[in-house]
Image: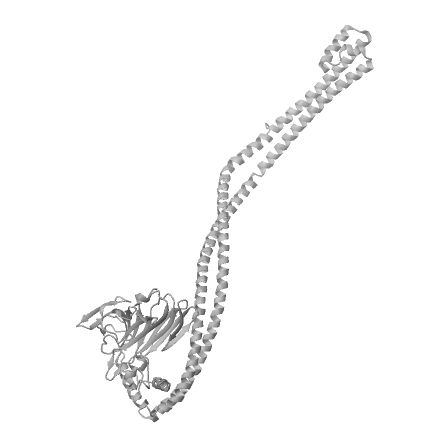
Length: 604
């Protein structure tokens, strides 16, 4: 237990000294106005056991001086320009000259040399070592061991690489996840397992492992069901020691000054980490509000889209109906000249001097005259009939009888025969005759008069109507023209409305999809902010612990291993500063390199 405690204290001591010298302004590397910076990223593709299968290198030549030509050095194969058409020429085995024309160059190639950091990954289930193929889909007690080897040595020390690996384990597969040199963060759906190592550093510092145990491997344990594992991502970088300059802290008094600076800086760092934790919590609260608002927006946009779809259908029906009406108006307009001509002809036929109205007036006038003459004849005939009837009744004169019978047939057919007149009294006979004749006269007069009046009135009304209809033809023509114009304008407006609604509906569909994406993104943001808030909270706690357990105790180690560590740290800084690229570096070029390792997934 005591050894572990001392080891942790010494680790803190190394970390404190490292941070102290990093806070001290470093001497800038000499550069000129024509210096090119080469930023190199090495991508290592590995199988699930950590064996390198392919190494790709991406180089960025930052041409800030805007040189026409850039001299470069590399041992890569299959070089290609990935962001331009600038060409290069090669001389010797590793010299390149890029025709940059003032532009920066991005190129990549393949490397076959060993990387400074190599890995091996072993899988165990219930204590039995298995290959990735064997362990796929299995369940039980899981252990994953990742060992890192530093292959880059400079003098007595290794180039100090800081190596971090991240694994993602799903909650429905992995439980009780633990790591010896790292941290496990669970966001409710998956667990982020992050481990940190510095392979070769213990040997470089020359401190007994009983006092200082700097991790060079990771040991991850868990309970697993139906094993599968996503890609393991590992980052390695050596610039942690680049800015160290311990030449001024060769004595304890000099180191004391550095520690005093560190003390103040550490306190500021602790306060800052607390503020960061508070800020990320506020961001998390804000992301939850954003998600709630985006959910409401998504719902309302869906309703708007449905409404616009209904409006689109209705507008299409309106547009179609107006099109049909427009066609009908065109047909009506084409028939209008024939209609107006027919109305004029009707008016002329009714009201001209030879028209129907005057003809009917003349006809009914003749009928009235004829009726008057007929009545006169009736009156004369009736008088003659009465006289003959009276004579026959009084004297039985046969001549009177014959005349009476003849007139009887004229007046009322079979009625009023001589026998009827002879047998009845004169008064009775006269009454029968008067009644019969009067009835015949009334029938003739009333029927003829009613028919004539009705005919005259009907024809007169028809003539007036024809004249009025003919007079209204200009108004009808103007109205039809206005109606046609209105229909055309309505059709044009409906076309524009339909186009607008089509655009609005199409836009609403896209906007609805966008709001759904926003909602999904906001949900992911909530999850990410939650994880960040949790992480920064733990960072604040860790920084407080770092200060309490590290800085407060560091002074006690002054007379121990620290003196040796100071010299070794300087050597590490020199080794780090000299390792600037994985490939070669041309003169007058400043380099920077980092490594990214990616293993194959298992069962994903």
